[in-house]
Length: 301
Image 1 (cartoon, rainbow, N blue to C red):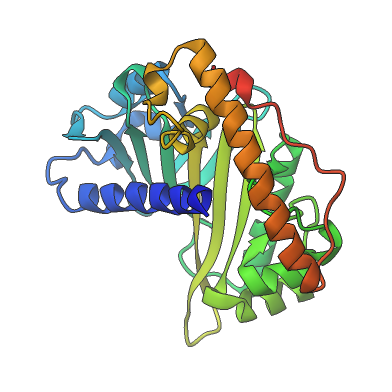
Image 2: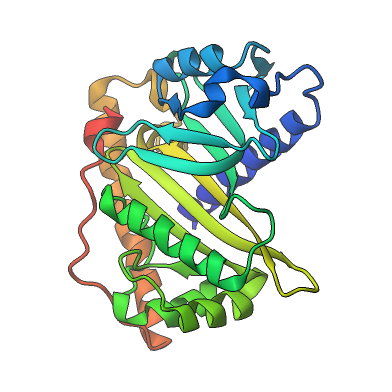
């Protein structure tokens, strides 16, 4: 479906630009020696985000034809601590070694943030240490109110099928359920790519979170990387409506045009979801009939 194509295309686009940026940053300031490294780096979305990155990094902005980039780098043993400002759902992220802030529309400020971090401070840890860090991370996310998010065009798989769906797709649909030690070991060692993912939402911000076991050494210790990919719901939604009936840039629409485009998108999404849910029901999955889409239009208009 077109909706899915746009979602995957956008994800690939952000990845490509991030990759290009990594390859052309010979003058980027390494922030590991900054005195500010002893306290969390506070990062906002929007125009304030530009000021935040400028405060912490004096290497300037990397401009490309369709986007501009700002970055922060940290090197072991001086890994960073980042606080993503999002009201009551602000999130502190530990063991950070890279942050990429992206703006596709300069007047919107920072719209996308990608953060790479370790699950633990140490590069290699014992399995029980990795599990303890996973539990701490999930508790922190739940405590500040990050909830599971279903795209409107996708089937709402019920929580009772959480582990089965995870083992098939690599995605967790119930972040409130914290796996037991035995479940964690079985999942992380057998799921495709040794990686599990969450799609979460809070206060107008989307978070695609992945926890990946990248290596095991001869001593049985494990290495993990945690990737946080944040998007503003405003960017995500407006970008998904770019191929609207009249092919009008959503950032140039009048309020009335935007409201109609959003209404049209709701209709298309509903049809797509109905098809998806029929397919997964045939596969034996249950549907979460109680899931309610968050009110996102308040952030789009």
